Length: 120
Image (cartoon, rainbow, N blue to C red; front, side, top):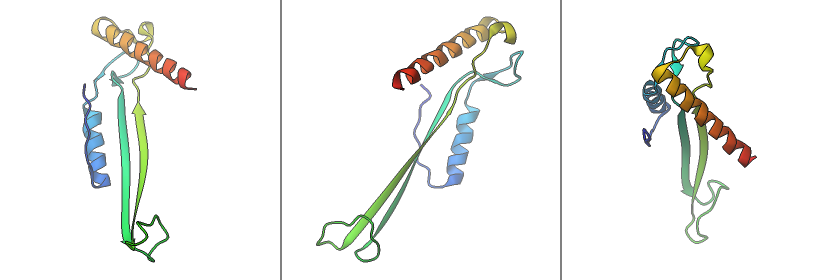
């Protein structure tokens, strides 16, 4: 399905991984666009920060009262979504395989719109 999960330890690793993901996307030339995206991409970034210490060093989440230790974990999530654009075959000149791709892209965007409508 083209799905994968990676552990990155630095912003540079995240940037490299996103570059690999972008390079793996399907693109093709149409009359409307020299490099038309023929696929969707979702990058889900989860950032975790952990901090530990001894009681009295911070007012953050304390451990058990008798341990004197504490640990705080912060988690942030960022979802980056890049969708293939909706196309009108008569304007893009799509035929054959490109026309079939266009139909699938438009169908998936319509389904996504239905999901968003149902959630709001």
